[in-house]
Structures are given as structure tokens and as C-alpha cells.
Image (cartoon, rainbow, N blue to C red; front, side, top):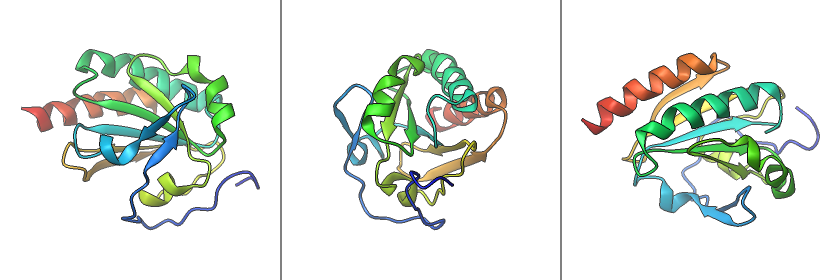
Length: 154
């Protein structure tokens, strides 16, 4: 873990996160999104790394057919807003990038940032974690996510 990476605990925290800086230059109120529709959180240290880009591209483009109103893909990077703003064009389809500047989003979901590692978490429409993948090939995550999302909405 680099010195620029926020220190996070490995156990979940139920504290509200609130507004998180986004790649659009604005903020996303994560607490308002969670519990309304399924949310896929992709935790990464560097939004421009090849692993992060591959996962975000696969999920963003494959889940876009599922519908913006039915799922939201959010890449959560352990970095500043200016860095995710520079990487905005890497978020394809139904994906957006967030800057977890202080590590509060990772802490909320019990994630520890590890350089080069990508952790994907599915939060159901009920706001409860439904699945977690750590360093799993992005194509298999997308397939499994689609299956789980179909199960939740049928």
C-alpha cells in the first residue's frame, strides 16, 4: 500500500458515507443511491491501471444493457477527485468513477485497498451486500453479476 492510499479497516462500518467526489467534477450522494437500486462498487487504487480499466470497461459495457434505472456501476478509487476526473473517459457505459479521498467508502464496506488489486462488491436494492469478488477475471464477474441481478429483479 502506498503512502497516498487511505488507511482503511478490514471490517465493515455502518456509518453513512454521504457525498463522494465524482469524475464529473460533482459529487454522488452514495447513501441516496444505496438501497434504491443494485449498486456494483469496484474498489481500486489506480483508476488508470490496466486491471481497473479492464474491469470497469467490462462491467460498464456489459451491464449497460441491464439498464441505468436497474443497476449503477461505481468505480471507487483510493485517490483525489482530480485523478478520477482525468480518468473520466475510462468509465464506459453505465459506469462512473468516485474518489475515495479519505477511505470512508472502503471502510464502510470493509475493503482494504491493495496496490494492483481490484475488489468488486454487489450491493442489492435492499442495501445489503450480495456478493464480493477479489481479483477475479472481469468477464466472469460480469456474467455472475448479470445472473444475480436477474435473480434479484424477477
